Length: 330
Ligand code: C5P
Image (cartoon, rainbow, N blue to C red; front, side):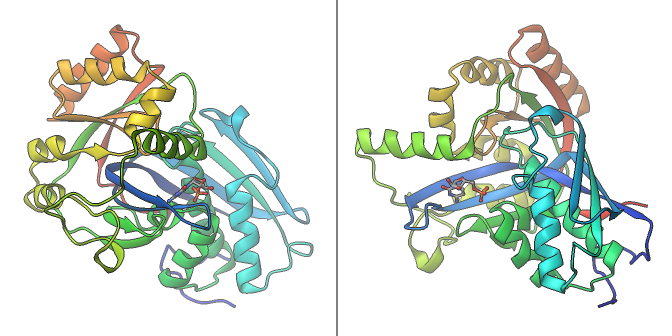
C-alpha cells in the first residue's frame, strides 16, 4: 500500500494535520431535479478562507471523532459526520480494516455549519488528504476526487481548490485560469440553512411561477452536451482579466431567491454591503452566508465594520481567494 502522495509528504505513524478551504459560488445556475434527487447545475466555485483543520492519528478500533471550534456543538459525531465517512470510504478503498487499525479524528472548525460555504465538505477533504498521508496510500488525484464525490457534491472542489467550473451535481470540475487575488467579506448568519430545504424551496417557487430552467442566451457552453444550465460568459472573462469590478457585477446565484424567502433578513445584509460600495454581494451556495467582493483590505474592513454596526449578521470575516485545495500542514 505505501506510495508517494500528491497531497503532502507521506508519514509513518504519529498524527497528520490537513487543512481545507471554504468556497463561495461566484455563479450558481440550477437546472432540473434529477431522478436521483440531485439537481443538475453549473457553478463557478472559488476557494477562500477560513480553513477547516483535521488531524488524524491511530486510534481505538473504528473511527473516533472530536470536534471543536465554530459551531462544534452542531456537528454530528457518528455516521452523519462527513470526516468519519471519509475515513471509512478511504479505508474501504485501500483495504484497511478499521477494527484492527482505528482512526482518531480531531476537527477544528472555522467554517460555520450549514452556511453555504461547504464546511462539512472541507472536513471530508482534509480528512482524506490527512489520512492518505498517514497511511501513505499513494492514491492519485483522480481516484481521490472520485472518492470525494461519493461523500458530497462539493468534496472534489474542496480537494482541488482555486477557481473551477463545476457541472453535474457539482462534482465534475474544470479549473478556471484566472489572474489576481480577490478580497471578500463573509457575513455569517445567526442560523443555518439546510441545503435540501433551499433546493426544495427553489423547486417550489419555480413550480408556482411556472418558470422553465432553460439557459439564458449567450452562454459559455459549460452545460453537459450543450443542454441544461450554463455559465454566463461575463464571469469567466472577468476572471481571465482579473477584473474585480466586472466579477462583482457578474455574481449570480439561483439559490439566492429561495434562500431570501426562507431567511428574509438576508436582504438587509446584502443591502448594507452594497450601500457600502461592495463590488458585488451574493448569497453563497444555498446560504445563508452573504459574500461581498471588495476592492482591497481597507475596503474589506470598512464593509465588515458597516455590517457589524448594522447588526446585519452574527459575525464577519475578511478572507481572500482563490485559496489552495486541501493540503497537509507542516
Ligand atoms: O451532495 P450533498 O451531500 O452536498 O447534497 C446534499 C443535498 O443537497 C442532496 O441530498 C440534495 O437534496 C441537494 N442537492 C441537490 N442538487 C445538487 C447538490 C445537492 O439537489 N446538485
